[in-house]
Image (cartoon, rainbow, N blue to C red; front, top):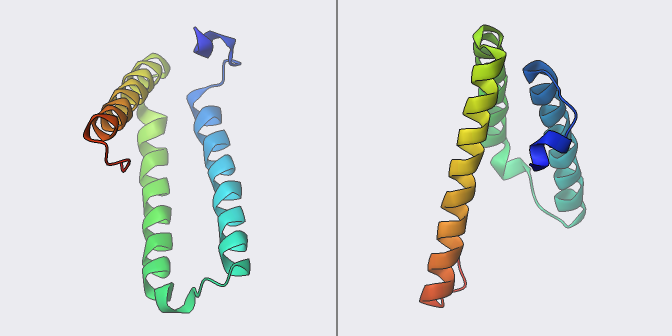
Amino acid sequence: TLLSKVPHYSRMNLISTTAACMTVQHGAKVIVFGTAGFLFAPWAPFLILSLGASFLGTALGAKILKRLDEQFFRQALKWVLTALAVYLMGLALLSILSGSGEF
């Protein structure tokens, strides 16, 4: 499978690498949207609340992740990613069949 070709990272390394990639990706979006003229000021309260929620979620997620068994984490991750993929393929199929072109 494709996952067998990926280096075997521990659950902590996998999650922290993903988080670092998302931080870079979102930072790039802020730069691009800011350069394009997006006004962040009206959204400041929402952005502040979102930032606080992300810190709380990260703290809670880290506690849960430390308690999870490595094998359970890997099985759960595979099931969740598979379910999301099936869901997205279903949305795409419905969009194609309805001719709307929207997801």
